Length: 297
Image: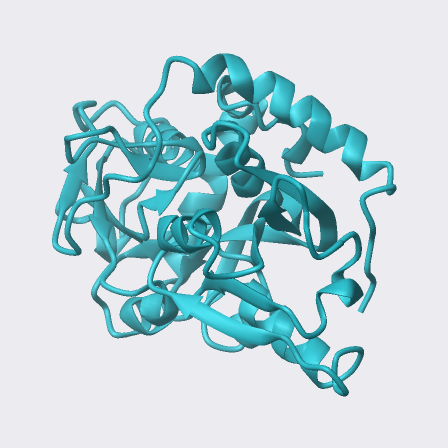
């Protein structure tokens, strides 16, 4: 496991990320007011006029691309405060791709992020897109279209970092939280089998990321693990109560999840993504959300 400390050059990258995101954060709502699991948000763009031939793509016969997502992970995806209007990086990328396909996109809140892959394989959604790190375990179950990253893990702590968590190894013996089903839970589990075997991390899991941040701010946990851009955004929203103490641990790309038997859908989605990269739409979306440093390399 490659571990990186706060002194790694990626700290400068995160500092730039914070600065670029600040302007957006000042005029956008945070993700503490999510809707219930059955909430659905639909893009406002009309279907039709796509640039890609979707003939024979069974999932798109109804003119709609149904996307499962845990819409509680700002700035990647979250609800506009008090509404079921989904917004964020993933939402804009999926909407732009759907426009290339000439279909509408419907965003459905998953009941549990930990079950998002199973929901896809059972046919509940056409695709899943929810800041999902591409891992060998997930690739064994579904296919992915890489679209962002690599993105590493950050450890968010109280602003004064009272336990001195400046590397991931220094979190051994501490109480750490992460969203259930995320790569961060796997990382902590692996640490408990290696570097932290003698003094294991007390791993606490939560149904969504805002709940992790809440417990951190209330002092119920010593630190919280999440993706770098999400941690940076949470710090910006926190009124200086929390801080980034470790960043850039084990980067992985985000992927759009597609069932293994949805070969034609996978093909046209890749074409749609390539199209928005080629025409500059992808770069514009990254810039809008302050995420240019994490654009797909």
